[in-house]
Length: 386
Image 1 (tube, helix red, strand yellow):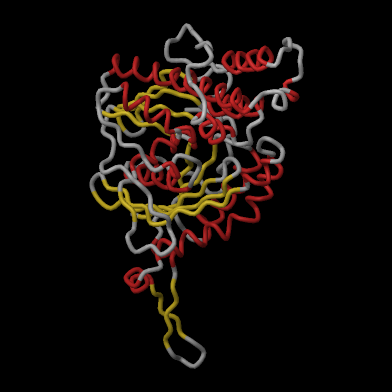
Image 2 (cartoon, rainbow, N blue to C red):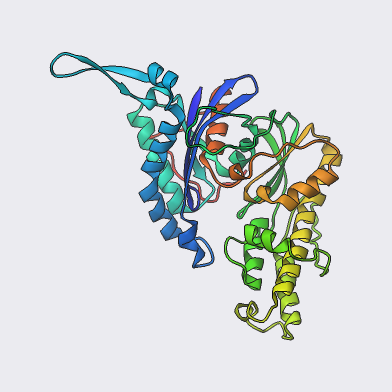
């Protein structure tokens, strides 16, 4: 079983082919990502119109490259040759990667409306013209399934080498989903059988990283910038608050972000009404590094504390982290130190938005006979939640 996954929920145009290779084996055959991050960096965040235009330009080349990368090998060429008759009656063969694809999976939510529309319309058209089953994928749920990929195609010429888990997670499984748009703690009893334990009430953790980075003058995206700056800082230099909520598994990062703003204003000798846009020029590099380190420690401790509490209560067999912030090394270090079971983290490149996570969830949808999407009527769901 081979599934083509298409992902266009935000600023990455991505496509990948994932193969279900047998019991508890998912093999990554290709993974292609075209990011428009550089276009958005000058604005300090993603501009929806620019993202959608970039998807239009990139979707076909990205998808075609994913197909070529997945099937460009001697054996797959032999298996997928189709015989064609030329005008003079001779037989020729032509490489047809679509003969190898068993289904198409596409993100239909959550995300930016214009961006989602490009991927969904592309997938719908392909499902109709290529006569392939179509699976509508929840972007947030799909992040978890990046952890189920344990193999990659050895003979790939251009695909980067990924450091993958040696085995798939087992159920019951606790998943911490942390990204720019989502912070959620989810208990999976099995595929497609899960309970949302808690989620953020305001800013997601990745969004908080972006906003704090802007306050102290670090470049967008904030996650990698703060992580890099924090290496030079003292994580215990400043005391910052952790939100306390009625539901012990819910999250809030708005107060932490505001506390960083007030700290920066105080350090520069100004009151709360001083414009945040002027703070970066007044903070020293040492102060920026110490703020970054202190903020990162508290933000990561917040999600790790709740993950540990859920682990103690529900006794899952495995724990996974998913989403862009799952690439954060401090998060991985704290979880490894706190949890009394080994955690196999997937490659950081598979934590950010990509097509392989979409294709992986698509594989299990097909395997478990989940409902197919109607290619003639599938609509986007920008505010989709788990």
